[in-house]
View 1 (cartoon, rainbow, N blue to C red):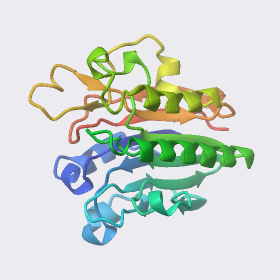
View 2 (cartoon, rainbow, N blue to C red; view 1 turned 45 degrees about the vertical axis):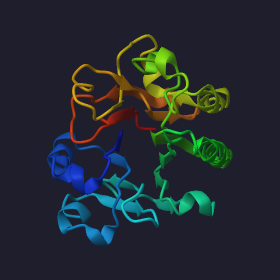
View 3 (cartoon, helix red, strand yellow; view 1 turned 120 degrees about the vertical axis):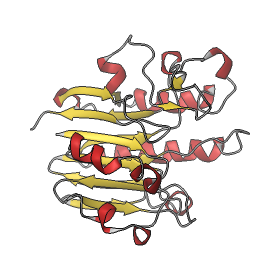
Length: 256
């Protein structure tokens, strides 16, 4: 079971840059998209269903903002949108899909904003999400949460960590929120499988030359519940894929 996640920074934008060709070549079993920035009614058939995937959408109320979608080869056994908190759910940040014994949570965590004004909101989302995930675990589900977490957890996860310690995405309080997931047993799949590999990032600024020089941040993750971790076979970053300021990431699970 190959699970991909990608912040596309606008689904219609990435579609003009070869998204459907990439989808056909990569053939994920499940693909979680973040920052779709679109309503399904605004899409043509090529993006709605002609690709052959079943899609679950959760769009933001604000036009052109946020939004997540989960594509799957087979229709999920059950689906859900949001966490039941209006402040978060109106921004279209969460889709939950059940695939056999695996529950996949597709999440777009808030950005703290350049002036750090949304760091408290981001913190509330992190804590609400952790409670939500732990409830799923308590129900006996095998859970993966993936998406754009908007936080680089450790110094190895961004190029210029020394100069970014007062920048949202690497603030001590944001990294501490990530620590709470680790303390609860959640496993950062890529880092667990590649503990000392540097210079592997998932987001780059659009400033000229930044991506070419690989001045990036690793802020997109698959976090795996400890009960499911023994079935993880690979965690990959596809940083050769263009079309967005993020790149896709992949988690490979063994069948039960």
